Length: 102
Image (cartoon, rainbow, N blue to C red; front, side, top):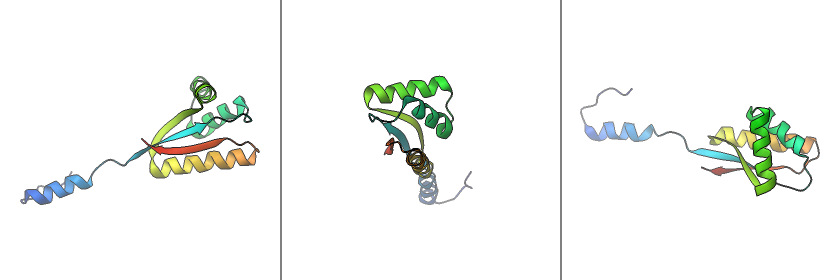
């Protein structure tokens, strides 16, 4: 908590600096080649989802073309996108993962 400052302008400047970080959605995109089981594994491995949650998101990706895996601060979202991309490449799947400002 900031200490009391006599000048109201300085106190307001301190408050404006304490904004919460911008959040970003991590989104999986559908393709015609990545197996559904692999997508479920990715969701469980990198987003700590249980089987039911992972299956629900996988079906959303499959049926609607995209599905949100989670919402994170920018650095965490970027790390998760890279982890998913590296894992997919390692297993020779074209699974695409992107981040969008929430």
